[in-house]
Image (cartoon, rainbow, N blue to C red):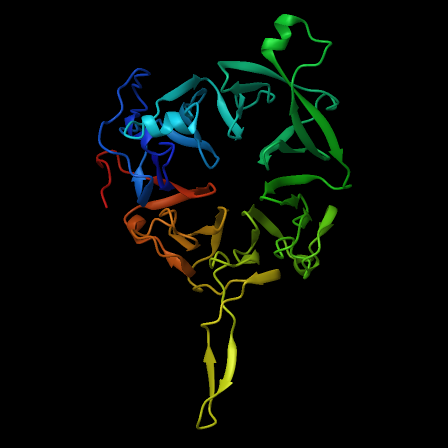
Length: 406
């Protein structure tokens, strides 16, 4: 079944509306943007790729607050990555506020990770991560990562903060800091090579996945355990305190459970167990955890009443979210202050901050409890992604479907 990508939320840099220009079968790099006035808030999920054929599917996605990078798989061995360009300055954005930014296209490349300055790519599924796209030079550059043991498989690489990428290798976690080419490079190499300083983090277990928030990092071990470290001022580490940790520490509240997915938001965290339970912890200022404080009170007649009106602002250890017994959670994604999870029946539920329409509910009201995205009810969602102020949905579509309208 072919799939299509839908998105909602912040569009201040045309990172969503840019894709409306894109016919994935026949992209014109010089296409003129729609002259209709752009709205920086997209409150309904909009279909970002048009005329997807049976062989075209969304393969991977990387999101920052100002750009989106998507890889489309065209056939068994053919990929194309679409990169939204950034304006040179805020002044440039103001001068061109009614125009969408065009897309750069990198054929035969696969999105691995992105920051607002760099995009890390692979040449193929089996290739090492050895290409980086630079804004100041639209050509792809070689990426050298020294001190990595030869033959080590790079399983996952994600952005962390503004300076770092984190990578999960076969046996260890490494922190990568981008730097200019050293004095050992020739002049030609200096223009073609981006080096990463390697800083191994010894844990003694094999890491399956990494997810980074604003000030904290979550690690998923191959054994299903979850570790965290960084700042903990909003309970985002899950250690039942607001203290920070300088090294990865096991989340004891989840010890003994088999966890299969993690997601770090700005200052909150999420995880899914192997039986489909969703756990949330951290900051809940905008309702991004989807939980409220239960208060038992006596009314005037002496009867016990239960109130759910008071919001939990900081949840310092994992809390299991009560869900309908008819479905389980299979994927979760966290933005700066919002959360989305996907159920095994293809439905999407969201909660949290919604000032840019990132919840996809057709309005700008924040939600303190998980609410179904009704606009996607006619589609089966198979994967979800979240940026700081955006949410993206990969949905199955029928070939005779036209662009979905809401």
